[in-house]
Length: 62
Image 1 (spheres, rainbow, N blue to C red):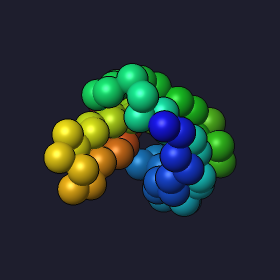
Image 2 (image 1 turned 120 degrees about the horizontal axis):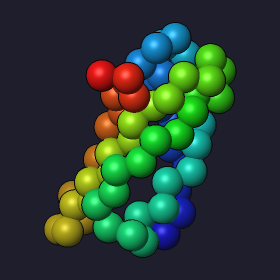
Image 3 (image 1 turned 90 degrees about the vertical axis):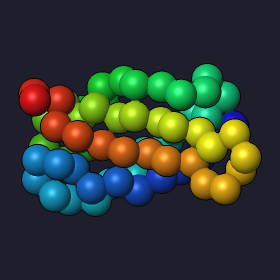
């Protein structure tokens, strides 16, 4: 399942919309900010009970 989510860049603080694919289960990957081009670590944590999936972002240089 592909979902559109809005996240805030941990570098510039600007919000941007991106697509996440929940069909792969829990994931960790790097995507560049669409505003400032810095690397952002995305962590996708699906909730198996359906109470709410979690998308978290962090600076990719830490």
